[in-house]
Image 1 (cartoon, rainbow, N blue to C red):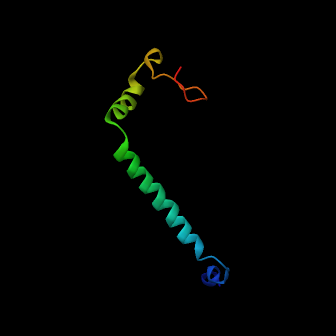
Image 2: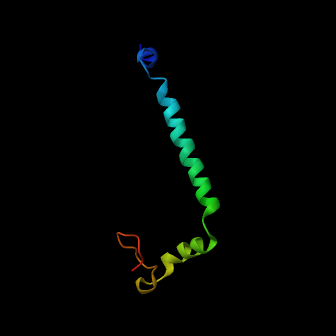
Image 3: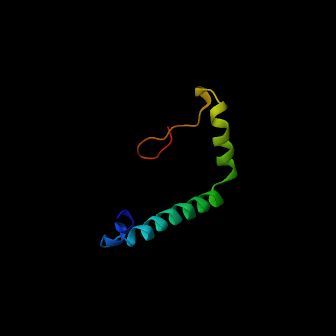
Length: 67
């Protein structure tokens, strides 16, 4: 009885395609980000947990400008 439930739902075949496309686009965008990001940014992010609050990276305002 439970084996044929998904076979009887109309339009169900699109969901695996959509989920694969979302996964593939996320994975591809992550690879592009890793390839493009600068080494200095990676080093700055790596040091952030070790810094005091006074030496933290400058915060951004709503307009995107640095404080």
